[in-house]
Image (cartoon, rainbow, N blue to C red; front, side):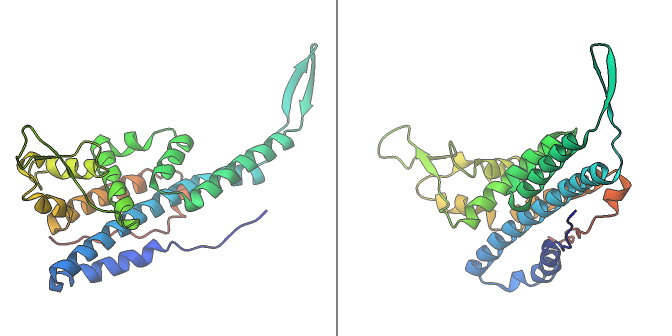
Length: 249
């Protein structure tokens, strides 16, 4: 049997967040936007770490059960003759399946972690945290994907008549989920209010305290629900993650 010692790197991020947030108002506007981008990456990575921790704790429990709790022989009946079958080979196969899940969890992005969680636990993540928070979580993931890979923020326009300024449309936009969540929360104006002349104001919707704190607090709620979902005492004892600090608006 193998084991490992580890420490969640996201714990260092939570220590930094509280300190950096208190100083971000001193930054120039351009610097602030970089700051927000970094923080979106950080909170997405943090929730990935917690989700991974919850999954791995369950896999460890199954591993322990299979390796250290004696699995009794199975009764097998053939031609009215009952015999006992050693289940060692079946257990070995199960251990390989658990190992494969563990390897997947190691470097999985958020979408894959959600998929793994849904396969391993009885309740899907969307059911566990609720529809609204699940949509917020996916919105943060879309922001993370954009900022992590240095892609362009963009919007497209639709025109009802030639030689007009058009109107912003979010159809097929990779950040539609994030825009929709802020629109629903009343943090940004309807995209129909923006056109070729002022669309830049719409694109920077994510670069302010209201937008960031909306998603930050949603991630805190997801974090709490994941923590509270750990009911098996040995798994609760293995919790090594540190909660995100509360931030003032």
